[in-house]
Image: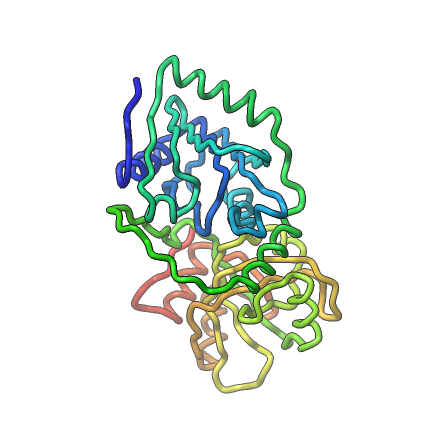
Length: 323
């Protein structure tokens, strides 16, 4: 059986299929856009299918043109459990396979395609589904190559974005609006900054990573936290470098992490601040005590209880959620 889909129905079908899939989620897309993960149901973070595979086209030229976002590729690798990502050089096929259904579509894995273009697709099951699945394996998966140098691709991406001219793009109005994911299934951390990052270290880190000058940098974290930390994670970052009456606590989102040798350590992450709270010093230490966080703790992955206690102090009207 084949079923024709377009517009909002195409997006809603992918949402439903990714939400209900238990065993298989195989995706083949030439391009990957910013926040492309939001095209899928957020439920896959909590209940991921057992077999997740991605085929993308990623090389220096593709990244430089902005066709494939390496940060989004890394997001898939880090957040989708048991996922495997490979690169295939030359193809235009958009294939989305979930359990016993396959969707062949003109839409790339980009929010722009779904929201601004008049994309179409055909949903297939039965005998035709088996043919699509076999094609995915023999043509793409078996010949695809592992992605090994994401760090370099991210540098190329950052350079291309710095040099990119601002253009006004007229969007075609369609009834599709990709719903933003919530913070419900994202890990939240607590970090303390005991010493200010030096200008020399900040310059060196940003030069080697090509992180934007607008991003803030955490000068050094331990290897365990560095390994666990994922792109898009949230963090409360307390600045303890000055003996002020009020302590600045930033509520931030992790942008990237990288290893760069500096006098202040080698393992760093960059972040975007969502909001900054000024907390009375005594109230800040009371908050840590209530959350069972030691005064000497500089980095910790928060559990539900700890997150609730911090949320009560900083944002009592709107509790912050965690996985």
